[in-house]
Structures are given as structure tokens and as C-alpha cells.
Image (tube, rainbow, N blue to C red; front, side, top):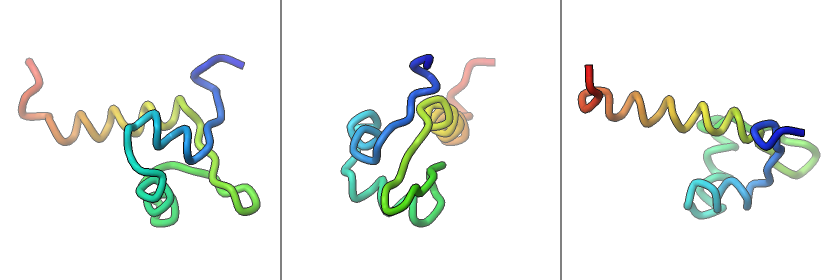
Length: 67
């Protein structure tokens, strides 16, 4: 499995994004971050988290992008 296809736990995503696990949990419940709930556990695909993060950064800082 390529590293971009890696399946991450809630704690791993929190560490990766340097956020508190509770924040990731809340966002997952509110569908603010792409996640799949398997039983009682949340799982995240790294490649999708990377795209989600990049889209948020691009949207937030569009005015600062070089043309």
C-alpha cells in the first residue's frame, strides 16, 4: 500500500495536522473532515486528508497566491 493510500486513525490524523484528537472527532461527526466510521472507530485516508487540507489552505489564502 502506497503511503498516500494509508488508512489513519483519529489520533494519527490529529498528530499529522497538529490538532487535538477531540477537534478531529468533532469535525468527523459534523462531516467537516472526510472520514469513515467503522463500528465505533473513525478512519481517514491520508490522500483524501491531504487533498482536503490543501483545498482549505487554497480557499483561505487565495488572495496571497501568485498569479
